[in-house]
Image (cartoon, rainbow, N blue to C red; front, top):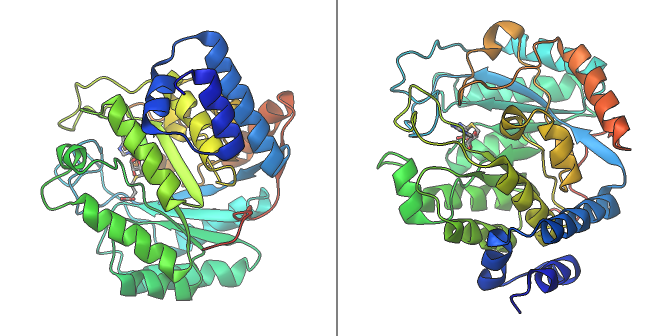
Length: 351
Ligand code: SAH
């Protein structure tokens, strides 16, 4: 059953597809078929979430990193990166601003900064939850021990984002230094799930050495792991990394993958990411129309936004968070969507 239209029907009805079916769909260039896929994915998102879009306020709390991922602009060997670390009071201020704007989820993302010690981060989480008991806290701070994940969970963290980056271990090794292994990453993801976190994973589209077959592996991994959240975005080169001269991933393929992931995992929370919005001027809207249902506005203080540069030309609205959200509300309204003032938890059973 390699007819892409039949694959789209199967994805919509049974939420599965074989590797051969996915590969045929990914290579299909027929605009009518690709539009049919997009429409089914948008309909599925609306079936699960109605016309509501959830916002997550992103706070980039540190760009120090002990890792040396070959694609990432804040890797430790990038001597041109100007490093910063927000103090807890600054993080709390970002949350207070976000709360006023109607945000009910705060995402604390950073490099693997071991000077930001685990206890200190636990204290920050507890303070946020104390000041905003109706909000969810998401952490995105890399690979840690089960004990640290547990401490953060007990402090009140609700969710954790850790992209698997690629489900193929050979490909993983081409993107990371020798000390980083796919098996460790997958173990972390499993530990996070067992502890009771809502877990998000995902990958870059068009990362160096990636083949379409790898994307099929990524899709099958997602189906099997069944995460609560899935973040994907195009790879974008950063000039001070070994991949500085590589080509960026395709926004079109990213949109197509968003639609396939929406149909594979109908209940997942899926953001239209900053990377997608960096490559496409209306990337947020296009992501929503392809089946995404989350947007992550940046709440980091203006003076550090230019420093959390994972890739070149990262889009900043250039405006204060408040203006940014007012504009977003208007853009979404044009498409018939509304911003929800709610935590926007996973709608299924957390397991
Ligand atoms: N240290 C945290 C946060 C990493 S940054 C962690 O390890 O999880 C969040 C995501 O940005 C990464 O998982 C990666 O998929 C993405 N990213 C990093 N560099 C990128 C680049 N050059 N282009 C596009 N996305 C990138």
